[in-house]
Length: 344
Image 1 (cartoon, helix red, strand yellow):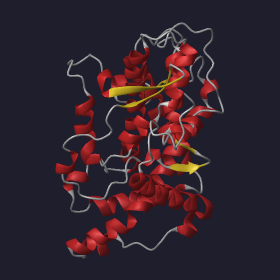
Image 2 (cartoon, rainbow, N blue to C red; image 1 turned 90 degrees about the horizontal axis):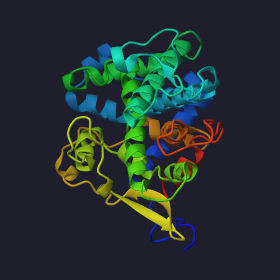
Image 3 (cartoon, one colour; image 1 turned 30 degrees about the vertical axis):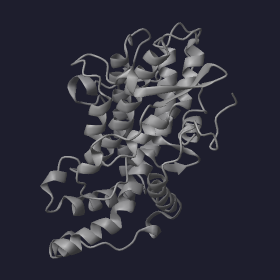
């Protein structure tokens, strides 16, 4: 059997509709990154928006939705790139003990997660979220002190337009940080949850920790598939994958996943069925744009692509995939292969 490619009937197919939306957001993000404030279109003030009819408000929000997600994608991309660049400052794993997962705060000058402190995937999940939230906080503060503050100002203004008269959106769109936090927390958590279930799928095999890591890196499609869902569908989709083992048990059911082999050896892991039952019956307020962190802003790598590959490497480095010879991640390669392989 040869390596699967886009023409192989066993390889995952591209999600055309969702990829088209992501492409529009990506184009807008790249335009904003290139032209800055000059690329912004006129928008109504809060007072002007308040005087519009419900139908007119909806049309304005619909028109600005791509830009809202483009701005969020730019911030997500910058946050994760910052985290990767600063890994050497937090040895040995590059993870930051910000205390967010324990106390819902962010230390101003946190130390690194120490060697041996991560014994389970739940430990990894907490440390990974702590790290992502810390770098998001720092990245937002850095933007407020430079000329690029226009990006945050615009993001806040668009969120104000969405919140006005929409109580259901107040929590998720309370401010720019909350909106960005939701997307990055999702990408971080899903990466660890998927890595955990895939590690259990590969447990019976004879693969080494390094070989398991390579399989995981190639298996990014489930993360992108979940990230492409409408926000109204995220919880039902996770419930479909949940094994029903109760609090503290596994996050996802291994039986919901399938291993694709090449020459009799595991090559990639995907969802056994990418159609989640019952989602069509759940009403959605706006068209699906998915999680902004899945959008490519610079190069060929998205924030979720970087999060996924780094998560696979971290699982290897802390020993969750089996004995390892060293604990050095592949700096510079993070995320690119995950983004390439997500469509097969």
